Image 1: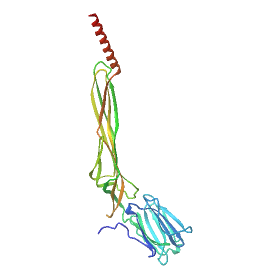
Image 2 (image 1 turned 90 degrees about the vertical axis):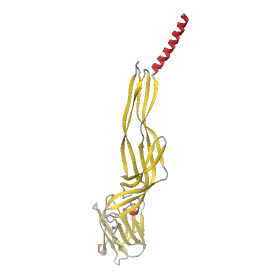
Image 3 (image 1 turned 60 degrees about the vertical axis):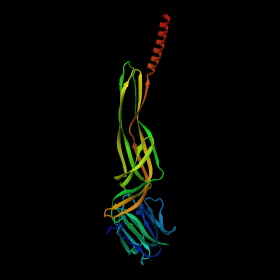
Image 4 (image 1 turned 45 degrees about the vertical axis):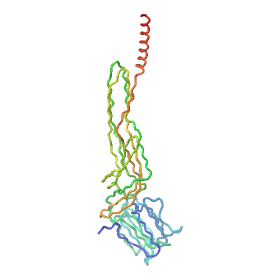
Length: 344
C-alpha cells in the first residue's frame, strides 16, 4: 500500500456553504501567508497567499466592521501544532491557533476564551502547510488544512522537453596577443605559448519561484552544441546530472618559428564562445521521507555556455626601416649600374 502524501484532515465546522480547495503542492508551492477576519465568535473570511503569488485567494465575506490578523511564514518555518475551534452547534468555524518551528504563535478568533469548547487538534504531519479545504458563504462554515505527511527528502527534474524560441550565438573571444620584429641582421626564433581557464556552464532556471526544489536531473536529455562559425545544437542523454553546473576548461596554445632580418609577425590566440538559451518544460518529482511522492510541471529556460578549440591568427610583415633600406639599396644599386655603364 502506497504511503499517504498528506496528513489526515481535521475539520472544524459544518456542511454549509460551498466547498473550495487550495492544493498548492500541485504547483510546487506552499502557503506563504494567511489572514483571518473575525466577527463576534465566527471567522468571517480567510485569505491565503502561496509562495509564487503576489495576489491572495479569499474565501467568505467581510466588511469594515471585521478586524483581521495576518501571519507570514519564513522560508524555513513550519507549523509544530495547530488547533481549530467551531461554534457551539458545530455549524461555523470560530478560531484558529498554531505554533511554528520558530517559536511564533498565531491565535485569532473567538476572543472570549469561554466559547472555545469545541477544540479540534490537527495532525500537522511534517508541518509544511500546502493548502486548505474551506466551506464558505457569508462566513467560513468549515475549515481544514492540508499538510505534507512527512519531511521532504529530495527532488529531481525529469521528462524535459525543449522547444519554443531558441537564442543561440557564437562569437570570437580573444585570449592573448604576441608581436615580434627582427631588427637584427641575422634570423631570430620566436615562441608564442599560453593557457587560460574558461567556464563551461549549463543550468535549468525555472520561470517562477517554487517552494519545492529539484536539485538534480534524472534521465534527461541535455542540450549540447558545436562552437563554430555557424551555430548548431542537439540533445544528448544524461542519466543523472546537477541542475546547475559549472566546469572549468583549460585552453592551451603554442606556436613557434623563425624571422628573417627585418621580418615581423603579429599573432592572436582566439577561441569561439557559444551561448545557448532554449525554453524547456519538465516534470519535478518530490520524494518524502516516508516514500510518498508528488509531481508538478515546471517551465523555464536552459542556459549553456561552451568554448571551442584555440585558433592562432598570424600576420607577417617587414619592419619599416628594412623596407626603406631595401628601397634605398635598390635605388643606389641602379645608379651605380647606370654610372658604370656610362664609363664603359
